[in-house]
Image (cartoon, rainbow, N blue to C red; front, side):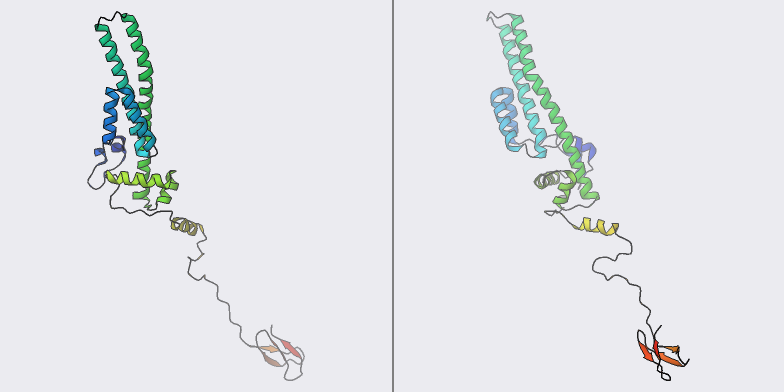
Length: 251
């Protein structure tokens, strides 16, 4: 369970706990025992490191630590072999010194090359997690995202990964421990975005739309085409002239 010191240079402090106080690795008792076994008896240390990796490597913050355990195990194996060679050189066992040195070089290649690869993997994993942590900090403190589903969509992680990462960052003060997060996704941001993209004349949801009022029509006086007399006609209707009976339409 570890987070790289790179976080110290990338993440601001929270709640009076500067991020540069984060340990390079948070190692459990099991991890310490594994490293000790790696330097004392490499096969046992390797077995313990592999068990640790298989059981915890799905956690983002554990990946750098697991690679680091393997690095120490292989370095420990090399030191053990070098000690054996040195003892053999100074003991009277009849073995040629050149043969011993050649064997030491061979063992060094077999053990130090994997150790170097695991060291690079640990550094890359620390850097990736520091970037992910920065992304969480920006989304939560700047964009005010409080739903783990939205954080998962924005970071490309699963919701379970997000929950574990947030607990870890809160534990070390990178995020405020008092922040509360909700499961699932919040549809409100999408709804607001859709509303902003709509026409400025479109009313918000739940409010009646504005309509241009219609002009009210009133009865009017119309001249009879037959006799020329004035007759009052109601809107949308027709009437017969009071004097000659000619039908007069409202127009």
